[in-house]
Image (cartoon, rainbow, N blue to C red):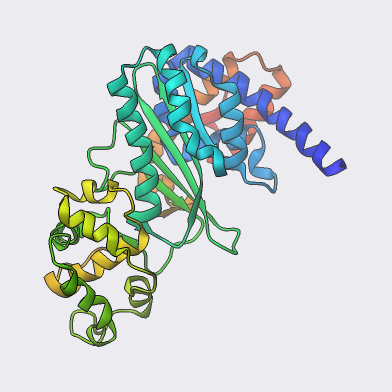
Length: 355
């Protein structure tokens, strides 16, 4: 009971800070700017740091998303939908409630629900990194600008990955769509069908859905033989382990795809029933039948690589925005100093958090 009481007190402490700072941020820069900033992986870390969440042994992204969902409401200009575990599936129902407040047409509601669904599908099926999704949070403004943050956990491990999406960045759901994927550890091999290097494999996967079932079944039946062929010979063991069809292929879905052939990889991926094993099976077929190899490079970046990835100038600008939000907030003088000190310690730039 004492532990739960402590957690509750700390949650309320962090919530009070985030509430004041985020509302001040929206007042100064607008809801669209806040939602865009949340699409940058380091910004969420800045928020966690200034309220001390980075010092607590807990899932800070989970806690921060819960705090933001309580703090931000459509009346502030930002709607927050989804959540962790079962709550992550609530976006469609919550979207319909938000639609009346933001005056969204049915067409826009369906489009935004589709965006939410495709983001989840890509990070759980098109990118196969061995992590399981358990958090899906969508931030939406009246301008229909959105950011989605997802998090996954490696089974039987404490390691997590965080995926950031921004509507202003997405040109395609299936080619380089992320604003960033943050990981604690990079893997030697990950099946990434969203990489530019996977373009030919995506096209080949679509083409394979036109093939008759016997030809595709030969691919599965004779995999032990094909495994030794030159197109897979010499591949690292990690790659072989990823691409091997160890699970059950859904032949019923393949039959439906042949009846209603997808025109693009996005259509293929969005098709109901297309899951990890089918995507992996078609990726194998793209190698064997088309010599079109997908990317096995891990697309994630590590925390210490964020400056190189996003640039110190961009990160400094976000820090300065937070500094202004902190100084303009209703927090006590002592609390403001603590927040600024925590940001300073995280970023390591005294000038950035001065004032």
